[in-house]
Length: 264
Image (cartoon, rainbow, N blue to C red; front, side):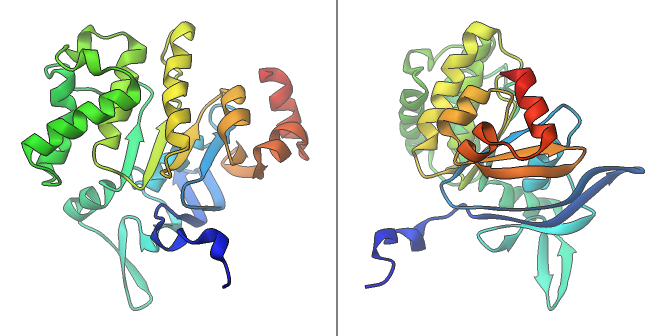
């Protein structure tokens, strides 16, 4: 039997395909003809100096940022568009929001609802999207709190938590919709240094869960330990991409070497 080693490939979701994507802000080309294939369940870390387009690329993956050229697909579906014949038409806002349910997004600054308890933060979306009833949503919330190690904080107000705890809850909240893809935009950059580890540990745990992860970060150690692919961007272009070993230990491009020598 052919391909027997990959017997579960047909039910794996979360394949991201980025094809010839460019994005302009006025005359500035924030993304310059980016193409990337990210396999289901893989972990990709995007590195680069600030202003290199990392966050813009991440935001394009769930259509928070509209691209000017090219297209992005997740599991074959165009993100933000539907195809009719050989033309793409932008989806209506409601359909875009529905599509976004499949893509979890964790921002730099937690974005929790301060007027809700931790538990309420975790059950709100699955109930609103009619994915789960209240009882199921609460059950799932406790499972997710176990994943992020904060079961004892279920009834706390989110504003009373430390930054690291809030970010771990934000990750749990994104997971509550069971996305196929999770995007992290510098998830530790707003945290005090001593709290960074607890958030990275949660993301490491997810890295083995089969969800496709794309992480914009400066944490090279994390990239080295967890990433399957590392993408290095400068000025809206991908300068170098490959396995974490290739890019971090044997960089081909002078810009990559320069960047790594600064951060290591």
